[in-house]
Image (tube, rainbow over all chains, first blue to last red; front, side, top):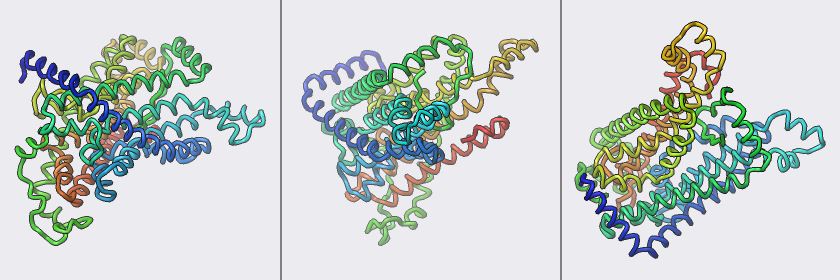
Length: 248
Length: 243
């Protein structure tokens, strides 16, 4: 199975499978996105406000950064299996397991995004008469947006890429085909794997573009300015172990 | 079916051996099962898991480190390398294992290639950031003292970059321990395998899931602590940056 001809042949067969099973694959991909979307939504609704408020109060940094380390240390297979023993096979179990996975980067980045807003900016906002909520809405959140969006993107990509594993616990999605060679043959397994890869890469590219589009123009100009003007200045090193994605 | 092949070719693990009441009724946790199957199930899986992780992080570090040294000299390279490693990281592990099968078969190599690919995104940017963060004054001093480029790298730049490099290693090790559990979908190896088998039971065997899962988490945290300890020994001046 190592000669180039065999490889080419195997992949051609996989593409043939994709060609003749379009609707099945689209169905499974939609299922996978549905699960990933639900998990991401659940994580955002619960965790994003916590991170933003903690960041605003500049409190609980150990908790916020610890969350991302804990998130990485908990293998998704363990999460899915453990939740399955409690909640049984199905959508809810997988959604919660994936939501736990998504919470780490969202919590860390929403906390860091808001907490890293410079003190001088916060002081200026306060001096111009802004109160806590107004300051959060009009000053801290816009400035935190790039880091916040990066956190959501990392979480989204992680969840979409991990969702196939949920197939082992009745999660459906492209993973259903990948773990079922008995029914679909290796052509199907490889075809579904290629589709899962394409789906993740597409989601990554789309979210990255979206992220750049929602960055406030002022911050974009600042980033471009800094990029061109500090070739030899120390670059801040991301907090140890924290999943902080920064635009450079 | 790949999974079925893996099951068939692997050692026969007597999940329900012993037949104690706790195991048969699948109680929340059966210490008896853990004691009885530590030697034939959990310990070998743990050892395999350490091997899978160690080899992946070792090779990944060698690649990321070399790439970072090149990107440190030729800065324009660091963006594309970082982008490429981020792209690799987005590929679902379950899919990447299968995509590699036509090239390397159902082997440990396949698993390692995928795990190595995933470490790059955590190692490369940290090593480059660590090197770039070396203060210009330190480099000026090194030049004033007559250090060659090689001496500057070994005695000034790398020691100062060490905390950032260890930070990258910590994330890489913890993530790889976690990702290596997915290897069980391809091979009867690692701590994911007992979990995989337990999930295949008509009613998933809890003790096996919890004990193997706890071992995976404990392994990740232990490795993390060891790396922190290593940094404290190698770079005692960086203690203030400990998170």
